[in-house]
Amino acid sequence: MRVAIVGATGAVGTIMRRLARERFGQAELVAFASERSAGRELEDGLVCQPINEETAHGFDLALFSAGATTSREWAQTFADGGALVVDNSSAFRMDADVPLVVSEVNPEAMDDAPRGIVANPNCTTMVAMLPTKALHDLYGMTAMVATSFQAAGGAGQKGIDELAEQVGPVGADVQQLVGDGAAAAAKATPSVHAATLAFNVVPMLGALGDNGYTDEEMKLQNESRKILGLPDLAVTPTCVRVPVMVGHSIAVRATYEREPDLEEALAALAGFPNLVLDDVPTPLEWAGRNETVVGRVRKDLADPRSLSFFVVGDNLLKGAALNTVQIAEVAVERGLVGARV
Picture 1 (cartoon, one colour):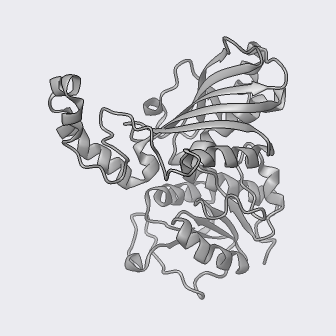
Picture 2 (cartoon, rainbow, N blue to C red; picture 1 turned 90 degrees about the vertical axis):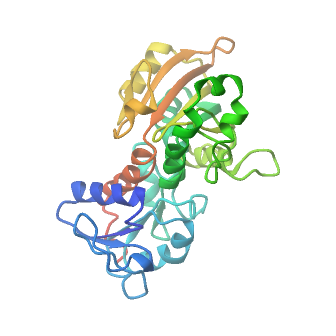
């Protein structure tokens, strides 16, 4: 099997290469990157190739993590050349002819992929889908209020770097943090995040739309509806950037058609694939781990048909690289790889 890794030098692409080697041990991996990286030898011995009409053919799988622009330009070329493309960008997520897949939640959706492309959801949506699916299957979800606490790493390496650079100068004077926060924040000049992130939370993430919601928040609504097959699901999203390097967290209040039983709900969550129960899940303690973790599961104080819970997942792993490779694994199991050749 020949597997293309497109965007192989980025933060997600680097993890994707490692996971592909672990899970497709006998496959031939080919790394693709930008023109300026062509010919560069990576730490795992792969040499970066440029993308062109000649090099984009002859693959069984193509795993994309190079941004929406590259995906729009080249994903269909790889698919037309015989590959099943799994794309980690936003380019095709809402395309009616492209299934949007979380490997544990709706793997059957990829059986109908007429373009030969399968999309990976936004990393925040991804984290929420495992517990919401487990409980929806029991009780029938009708509405979801989701407030995210998204890591700096959601903006890529540049987001991590900006937070790391701010920690020293902004935190140097603790009394200033207490008594004159504006002066402390002014010690940093943010360019990646909407405001100084160190010792702060920033309730603006993405481009603001006419409806007062950001594009990141609208992804939570639109992608959740598509993945779960619930086009009328009522979603109230708020996305917040927090001073965490890696790991997105979401506080979810979900409402159901029938009243949930707490013990039954906990058993369903504990038995769902790659989902772990923890009393106090935190992104720091779960960074670098493949599983998604859920905790603080409790009945709503006002509505007996609602449950609240807190879910955490590594946005670089399950939120991006891991799910991409898991989709590819499931595609192999379902006989979808090589079917387009």
